[in-house]
Image 1: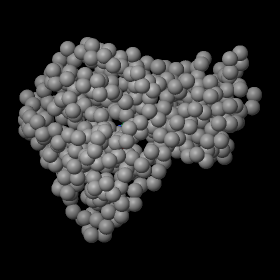
Image 2 (image 1 turned 180 degrees about the vertical axis):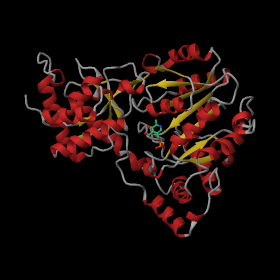
Image 3 (image 1 turned 120 degrees about the vertical axis):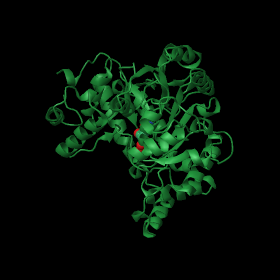
Image 4 (image 1 turned 90 degrees about the vertical axis):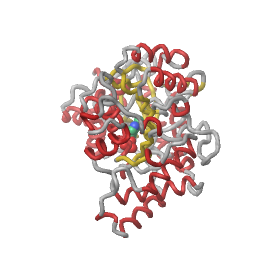
Length: 446
Ligand SMILES: Cc1ncc(COP(=O)(O)O)c(C=O)c1O
């Protein structure tokens, strides 16, 4: 059987990596294997394994950072909690797009929202004695669980697929009633499934966080990127759905990587409501030298981790946010292309026998965005990862994301522009022709 990418070479590169299963490879491992196959075969894959922005960074941010560097900020330590003008702009940004009032004092930059998540875990899990567990609403970003493990924190997780809408509350309570949950974490829109919680679901999460005194770590890594609504006009509804409207026990973790195409700069934002920032915790002092939550965050966690964020980078983000807040730069328009790609690519997959695994938000079809999830009859996700490699398509298995849908893969649209759609369609048609019902051809078992 002839496949678009020569089988012998694919197998050879998989074997060279020495993994038990290519289908269970981490994102970075799969990335390496596909790089190696591309080099060995000279053929280009449809790369859907990694969630990296495929768009250039906004010129406003680049220019603002260059100007700051030229003025010499590189020789000076920045404040741990950010330059004042950036803190104010983050506060305005949150007001403009989420419609919540968070003072500049408790808005600050972090080294990517990844560091923001890490700090949030550190502080939430040490806030209250005997409450140190992180509860992940899955599927989720595997690195967050790695963070919990690195910090030595216990965690629990469940796949939300079967618990959408009114079923979410009772499911959450089975964990919360043990009274050891420090924080609930999820991303919204969700990596990997691109599900977006409804207002009703956010209200359930928020009211339970208040009742059980745990903190919601709301990971807004794809801020404003549910393109079904136009969230792009500062200060005007509709506002980005957030648990912030339903509880004071939350931390917003906002990434600049995808919404602003600034992944390489490693700058994100954290916003903590005033009430939580000025609250105290009976377990903070031994770790952070103060029982005040906000103080522990800045002078404990941030000091210990990186003592702030690169100075010039803060000016870059400041310049961009100023333009976004004033309406001069529409960041949603800049990334909308991902939604258009997802619409087209999902069609190509479903027309060739694939199904969308996470397909609904309660009673509404899921949005088209940065990721989507796929399955093919007769394959587990782990098998499908490898099988698709022979057809020049790379994606990761949902098994690595805490999903119970072991048949599924996560596909990221960011590196596949329209110019590659023809190739993708051809490869999928080949796949379908080789695997359609009655034809049980599977390379991985031969
Ligand atoms: C859900 C989620 N959270 C956090 C991040 C990391 O964001 P940052 O690049 O700002 O550290 C990502 C990046 O892929 C993500 O998907």
